[in-house]
Amino acid sequence: MISIKNLNFKYHDKEIFNDLNLEIDRGKIVSIIGPNGSGKSTLVKILVGLYKYNGSIIIDDTQLLKDNIKDIRKKIGVVFSNPDNQFVAETVMDDIAFTLENMNYKKNDIRSKIEETTKYLGIYDILEQNPHNLNNNQKQLVSLASALVHDPKILILDEALTMLDPFDKEKMLKILQELNNNGLTIINISHDIEDTLISDEIYVMNEGKIVLQGTKEEVYNEEKLLHNLGFDLPFMVELSNRLKFYDLIDHTIYNIEEMVDTLWK
Image (cartoon, one colour):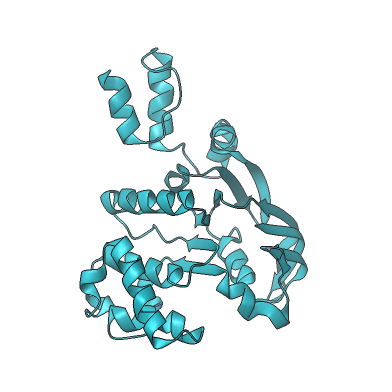
């Protein structure tokens, strides 16, 4: 879905990327994690055409160029860490509609798309509310609705789970997994390794370079390298390792429901 080759980029004469190479397969959930300042958010801005770059970026079989940025953006939905910075209207309805209006959707189509998306996400009943007055989970769901309402092929989460409490984060992760099961490619940008548990693949960045990549099993096995970058293993992985040591389970378990079911048996 996304192929990045020999990406070079400087910001105010500071080198951010030097021949960065990255491949993201269609229909996967991919996490890109790294310490603050490692280049993660800069990469997002490059992918949506906000920064010029040197190198090659191909998104859904189309090379990202200055003259096709609008077409590329139609393929991508983005949710940022602070939804308040994304809101542009006084009601949830108008805020979500803004995305479609910019893409020249007809009025009847706008209404039906908003209804379909908000019912799916469970926020149809708050369409007339001011998005700034919602709780954090509702705000992120509104931002997610704005990102999904035009049926993108790629969803990028730029630290989008940061403001959620553990309960709401778990609900959001389940929604993301369901969206992925329906074919959506998801790129999760985060500095929190806990957010990587639903990933098919993980890329670990540091100072603009990929220092570790692989399936989550392969990445979690590199505990020393992760620790050197300031990451502990996710809690469920740590718990699994301890339980395996005592022969209480025989494999790594990544979610609490499966852990409870396994131990209960």
